[in-house]
Length: 158
Image (cartoon, rainbow, N blue to C red; front, side, top):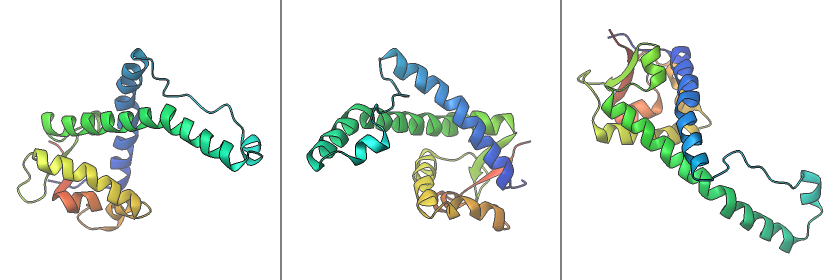
């Protein structure tokens, strides 16, 4: 099996970002959550607020938009993990580009545990200033940090 490189994986990520977010945005919109809401305050008006006003403003923002963004992130995580488990390691973007995630040792479908560890590993890849993702471009086995943590790899599917 041939390992997939950085750019093809990045393209799959871009496709997934659009394809997976559409149903989530529609679902949340049906429940009255405005996922695109933005503050009516400008940077200039925030800079002139007193401390008490700023605290009240940030508390209001965390209650109004923070909750929905957490639910969106959880929905995205659940949807991604579900795709990996139910569709042989392939999200829509990977499927379109003939890629799939496999166990690095056996080259078989990944387990539920590997799917969860891999998704959580995305945060480790992000918190390293994206170096965890960039590892794909520089490693001979084309594995990212989250692949190493979950013992997975992304390969071209036959």
